[in-house]
Image (tube, rainbow, N blue to C red):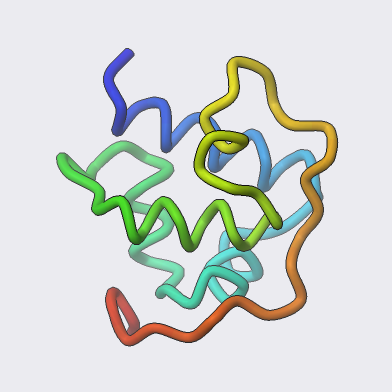
Length: 89
């Protein structure tokens, strides 16, 4: 599994674990729902580290926790993620 596939898989695992819709997670990660759909469906060929950081931060995780072999138990959806204009609607 390559890194893009790992990001897609972990993003979906965490989103489902916390009962979030793609729209809700996109809002927490400050990105468009369409962009998040492209990540989860593995249609993105490359993903910036800053994008993965925003997804991880949406679950109150650091990058090393996001990429841990098992889905982190201590993850929790963040209430607010620092706003960025990258990948916005």
